[in-house]
Image (cartoon, rainbow, N blue to C red):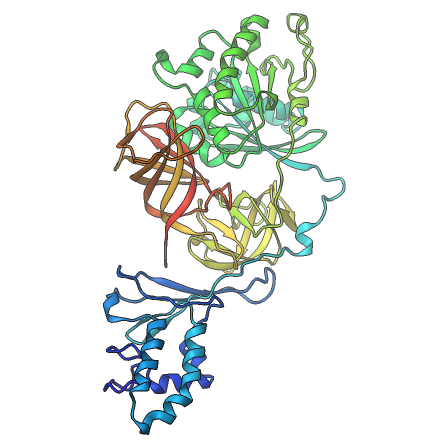
Length: 595
């Protein structure tokens, strides 16, 4: 054993790196478990690198989703150390063996007795960080998740499948009017409320806004005549229970569109067929910029939406002209193909929301029926296919908003379950605050329900946590499988139409699920060719239509996951000066935030 004169409290020798005899002997006793927080099952040893060490949290967890046991966090931090002061566990073992051969006969028997204990200890420890006699060992999280039986239950009989449908398009294309008209025709707006909206709209000289006001309820939205936030409404078809996400069209409120419409399974792109209005939606004001029709189409495809209904609205304004419709289909169709929408996944529906033509039944106007024999909008919605719902993975529910429950008056986390399932009494981990809470109540469309599964939009009321700790952009997840919280990411992006090249240090708004955070481009790693192969040299800047791998640093850490592990938490959008400049996916979490 080591013969250097060390203080009795030292567990290792700073000169030779060998464990002290008293520390090794304690391995035979139960007290060794109190010195080491956790031991990895992986083989091998680890050494501190030449770089400064960082905080390494040790987390222990249980995988029982509904049991009494909760996730426990133990986090120890240490100061920066120089690797020259410490030796690896492996080198310590070999050095100790050499020193033992040189010991006198008085220590020979003691050395032989402890040799087996040292070899067993050093072979079991895979990650050991020692600084000032503190031992910090991270225990790995469970590698496999096994869903419980209730999570995999079949669709309840008589219950319609839920379809999340985003309504997007250029400002003043008639999105809110179309949504309000659909709700009214399907009996979701009472005659009393409709009469009230019509009266108030006429009093303010905006008679044509009566149906839009069914969606635009705030005073400011009604005064300005535009949608500012994503309005949520519910309707039922023969096949689906539809959640309508009426999104703002004005360019100033695109961030709200990104936050709300990321929940969409499919989308309706509303186009104004009027002469000049369609062109503005494509080319912007004066034809010098990208219109909101184009930007919304690019964004909705980047959300992962593959099925699209193009509602060519205001056909009454052009006399239900077939030629005008064909012109729109050729020009917009070409752009949609460039956004990777397949022709077979795009449905074209000409209609007039104001005149109630071709919404829930075939048109009645002779000018329309003379050439159109296709589907109405409601039938087109029923023809959409539901994306796969993954309930076999751990729970992930991004928090879109924190609302007050209409039934209880308590604060609730509102959002769409991306994966997994929850029920009343389930334990959930709330991020980024890292607190465990219990599900008290689940509400769907203001009605209580006992279970929610992937694809459902719900409001979840929690107990055991302060309401101020629940924030939009946060995550509810399985306590045993936490979502990473990070601020340094690698992205694979597609640069859109931009006027100013993207340089290293470029300041951007970083959008991901329901979060917006200031960020900067810290590195341009490589350009990607059409096959996805990276260039050998890194470019100095990026320009329009280029694909590239970049690294970004966020001012504050956000809940994020690599796209390959969770698509909903791995889609990113970069914006600057009021425009979306790039869309992409998170390919690597470069540095995870440690608490």
